[in-house]
Length: 81
Image 1 (spheres, rainbow, N blue to C red):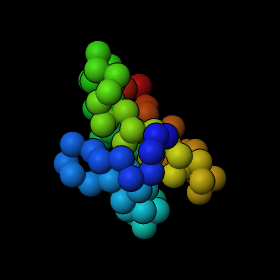
Image 2: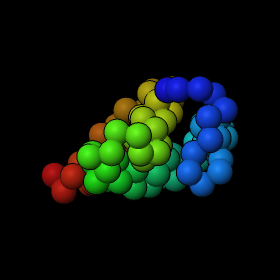
Image 3: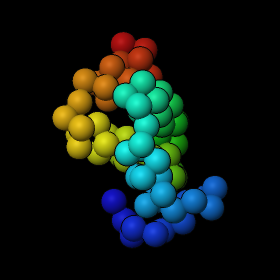
Image 4: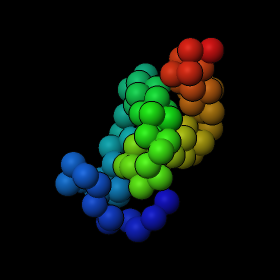
């Protein structure tokens, strides 16, 4: 997922975001995933968009928790399925 301390556009680091996701409740993680799945798709024409990292980081956190259903539900909601 890139360099650990790489800065995002908001001035935070990727490491800080991973730590933040780690502390989120399952519901907050779901909300994060839904938001950034949609934004990542919206930014599909910009492969360097931070939204792709934020989406991937949400997926990684769901996987780490063995709760892929959180990401799957968020994806269905974000895509209107």
